[in-house]
Image (cartoon, rainbow, N blue to C red; front, side, top):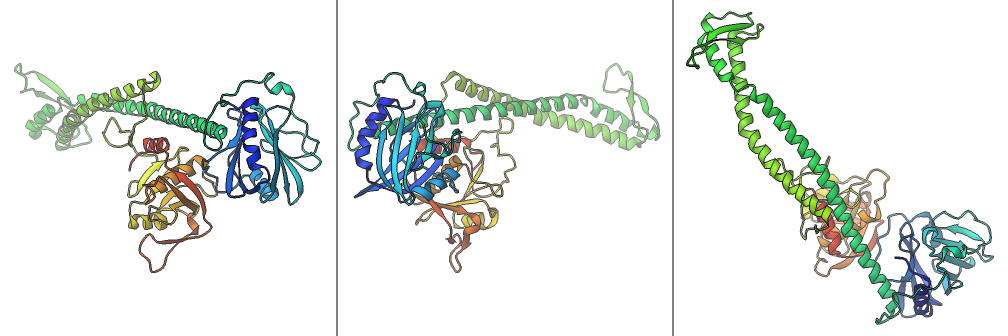
Length: 476
C-alpha cells in the first residue's frame, strides 16, 4: 500500500504546524529508498520518515528506530553536507498531488527537497534557490542542472481517493501513528514470509542432500550384499591351504557347507598367497556384516526423517506452517545430528546466521568474549556490544573491505541486546565498530576492552526477528 493524495493531505495537515521552523539535527539513510530527518523544535525532537520505495511510498512522523549502514550512502552524505543544521521553513503538498515540498534554509541559502511519492517513479530531488535540480536519490532523473518540473499528472490518481486513516484517533499525531503502525505490521508479515521462504529453501536443499545420501548408502548395501557368501569361501580356502600354491587364479573344492557336497570354483588373486586370498574373503565378509548392522538402521531412520521434512514442506506450501517460537535448527535426518553451516568450524561461542547468510558469533562468558574478539575475529569483522552494561561480544564475519548489509547489522545488534543486562528492559543502545578498533584493557579481567571509532544504534527486541534468527541457526 502507498499513501494516496488524501492520506498525504491529512498527514501534512497534522505534522506541518509541528515541524515548521524546526532545525534538522540528524540525517540518515537506513535503506536505499528511505531518508530519516531528526527535526528539533522547542522542547522535543521529531523524526520525519520519507520513503520512495515504489511499493510503500510515504511521508510521516515515526517513533521507530532504524539501523544505519556503517558508511552513509553518497546521497545521505550530500544531505548532511548541505542540510544538517538547516531550518525547515515550510512543507506542503504540491497541487494536491503525491508530491511534498520541503523548503529549507541552510548554510548555502534556500534549498528545496522535493519528495515525489508517485509510485514506480518515486524519487527525492534536491533543488537550488533557482529550482534547478542538483541531485536525486534514485538516479532516475536525467535533468540534473535543469529547472525542476513536476511529473505529469498521469502518474497520480485522477480523482481524490478517501483516506484509510481519516477517522484515526490518537494522543499526539494520530495519522502518523496509524500509518507507522500499519507499516510495522506489514513489515512483520514480510519478515514471517522471509522466514517461511528461508525454511522452504533449507528444507528443499536438505531433502535433496539427504536423499542422495540415502541412495549412496543403499548402493553400499548392494555392493556389500555380494560378499554374503565370502565367509564360506574363506573357510573352504582355509581347509585347503596345504594343497594350494601361489600363482593360481582359482581353486576347485568340495563345498562341505552344502548337504549335496558339490564341487565349486573359488576365484583367487594369482598375485597373492593363499593366506592373503583367504584373509581377503574374510575381510569382505566382515564388510558385509558391518553394512547390514550399521547401514540398514541408518537408512530406516533417514527415511522417517525425510517423511517429517516432506510433511513440514507440505505445511509451508499449504499455508498451515507457522514459525517456531524457539530455536529450531534443522537436523540431519540421516544422522540425527544438527546440520552445520558450510565452512563453519566447530568450537565455542553461540553461532547464528543473519538474514543475508552471514555468520554471527556471540560469546557466552568473559573468557569466550576475549577469545572471540582477540582470537577468532579478523581486523575487518564487525564488532558489537550493548552500551554501558555487561554483555556478550558479538562478531559478524565480513570479507575484507565489505560493509554489513543493514538487515545483518540489525540482526547482530538484536543479539548483542538479547545477550546483555538490557534484555529485561527489551530495548537499549548497541555500539558497533570494526574489530581493529577494539583493544584489550590492560590490567583488566578477560573481555574488558577499549573501543574507538564506534557508532551506535537504538534497538528494541523484536520477537519476530529473534524467531527468524534462531530459525536460521545451524548450531549453538
